[in-house]
Length: 333
Image 1: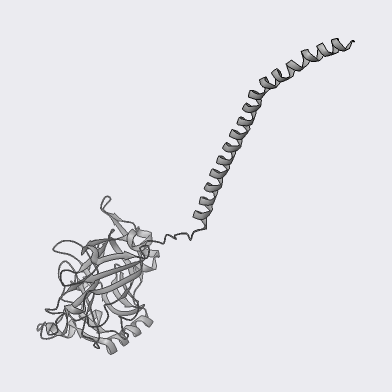
Image 2: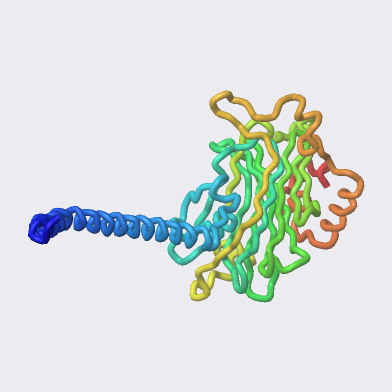
């Protein structure tokens, strides 16, 4: 091939090289743009996943909130006193307060027809004169049945009076009172009511302090037909609660607060829909709570408490009952 021909070929080839390069540039730009776009998207996705993962790790690494049993939230409602009654510690602690304007109270959501209830209570500390902290079971209506714990406050340095009573078909006047063998304001203590068809027993820290037996055979009504709710309240009764009303409430020391915890119940839940309880005939012959009576050991403990700590017994009050006490006093004492 002659040089001119080679030159001609070169002249034909060389002009084609710049033209193909120009055509390739847009494709190259598109490829680079696509790569950058994909890279950006990948970075964004990676960052999003990473952030989400960190958020999950942060959430799961935080201390978890342990939901407790919520005993008071599940079993009780605040019945009066507004924010003077408070459920705390995930529903495992409840406080009731009293000030010059109002006291407060709570009640159980369900009713029982027989059962054993336990409640730990720490009473109002210091000078609690004129205050009453109640913990009781009661039915409704004029002819109500009722089983009462009432704690009558006193001036500083003097003991609380533990007041108990039993109402049947609207009739009470069966008071017994005790001075406790400990300071009930310094710590929680367990106060229990056992109610079955045979008897009613009051306990303090599992020690029996009072028994009211079923004496229907002597004509004494016994609470066995009306279901009862559980109640508690803190209120003012300085016209009678402390030393017969001689010591009044010192409102400058308020608000006065009692605390509750560790409630438990073993009982027969009443249903108004079926007009029956959750306990059947087999339960009454097998469940200890429904058939328990005073054994020898508890009778001895009861006698000791009555001898050393009882300060009033209606069965011995000849001034109030000049015709003599009720027939149950011959059996229940």
